[in-house]
Length: 166
Image (cartoon, rainbow, N blue to C red):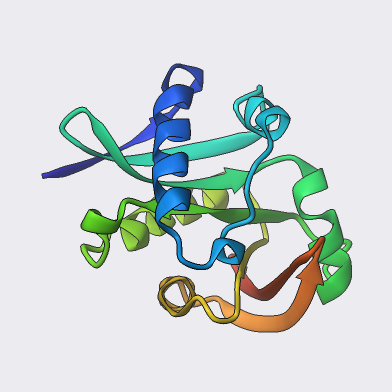
């Protein structure tokens, strides 16, 4: 049975092992925007991200994050016109191949959306490569709407927006 829990600094190495395993198995590397070692250290710093993990026993099999730092959403907010809104990004989706299609990502998304609501955010943005069918479907499951397709850094991404306060 899969268990879900928040990850902290102590689980960073498990997170890195999972990330590397998923990235090594990707046929299309552009589907995931890789983190540098410095970005990984920052992600696990205070008030940078909320990490949720899916465990099968002691094995971390899936993760997703809410990126709390404004720097993560600044460019996206400008592209889609939400500069004056309280926006958070949901991302970093990783699930081991043998655990896909079991609803793990949907559960992680649901847990993180609830956390964003409790933190009083107005919008969640999610970015996905336009040709990554599985990830686009997972995002659409949240009720988010495609706002725009744009280049972020060097990566082409669909930008989805989920309004939390209606």
